[in-house]
Image (tube, rainbow, N blue to C red; front, side, top):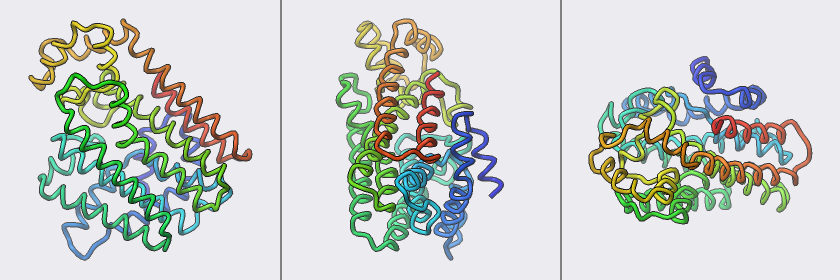
Length: 338
């Protein structure tokens, strides 16, 4: 467990440290469950599973499920809660493995991505194995409702990836399409973590809807923050290559708004996509321009609107240290935007 704790400490802000400290035991139980479920009598799967599990990560998604469960009156340390928290992290990890193959990414969480180290064929199969293991783990709950939720979630995430693939290299993407992809690829997973936590707690319809809405708004704000960091932060902060979205031909909200404000930048953005490198303009220059024309402030305002909406959703829940921690998670996103 020490490796997991150290990995978390590297990425914790002051606002999120309290959250992880409160549910440290539950996250350690989920980590052990991940290790147990990823174990196999096939040596290569054992090795790859350990490589992925030991890469760390913030474990935000299992933390959300546990916190939502407690906040709705459940027992976040119960076998069901730990099992489903593990499932959500497995689904997230499988998605990252497949995304890295599609994006030809070499780095994930400050180490070689599994496709870069072991090849695309191995990575594809390992991602598939993780998906199936996640569903096998969830099946132990004997809940058709939860299986249906997970199936719907996985379908949406896959649809988001497919939609994004058809838009690679295109500059005619508007905000509506951007947010549709964002919700499918990122926000619905946050939403499902919180809603499943509520389901496991036998929460009321109002509490379940509140936690679902909280998760969706949080997921949107979280991804908006990621898209800004991709064009403003360095690789050590991101844990992957900085500025990679544009190089991969993905038009995110910062660049959509930049083109709206400065149509003459369209040709420059297109040349970066085609070249696969920042030749026509440096990444630092692009970041500075986004700040000067007000794009970064505009996205920060959008993110804060979703943060405020998520915080308001929590009003339905009774006061508790776990509800307070869900509010602290929102502060973590706000800190990333600062």
